[in-house]
Structures are given as structure tokens and as C-alpha cells.
Image (cartoon, rainbow, N blue to C red):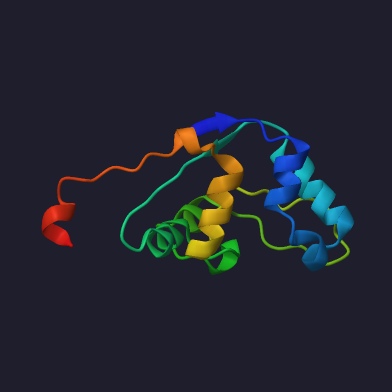
Length: 126
């Protein structure tokens, strides 16, 4: 886990697919918002980590997020109309697939910040 301010390159690499979905103006607004202050990046691992974190975070659209999830309890901003280019304030991001997680970990963390280690219960659980 670390806190950092994301530079232009990091933000554009992270959101490389967003322009095609929401347009250039909306992408610029999201990037400006993400860069308006520090971001806390967390690397989590474990059996089914992506699915577990997605459950904890809740559905991407806050209106669809279940109660007792981060988005369900704390996000109250819905998606905007296509012609509204204000940023959707991103409270939390979670990778959608293990492949996406691998790509995002490489963007947000240096190899020296990620550790390979055995957890004591792995010998018994797997």
C-alpha cells in the first residue's frame, strides 16, 4: 500500500480504454479529478482476490451497489448523461479480472514494492 499523486502518464495508461467509452472531454475531467490529490493504491492477493474485492467494493454504478459495500454505503453519485462531461468522482477502483489486476499492479507499483511470500496457512489450506 502506498499513497502517491498520479502523473499524466500513469493516469492515461490506467484509463487507456476510457476515451472510447465516454469521450475525450469526460476522460479529461476524470483524469483531472484523479490528479487533484493523492491516491492510495493497495495490492491485495489471495484465493479469488479479485472476486472478493469486487464484492467488498460493490457494483460499478453506485445505484446498483448493494448496502454494506463501499460504493453502496458511500457513493451517491450516479452515471451522467453522455453530454455531461463532469467527472464521475471515483471513490474506489477495483480490477475487474485477474488479467486487469496484473496490468494495473504493474502501473501502480514497482517490482520492489511487491513481495512473494508464503503465508503460514497455505501449507494446510491448499
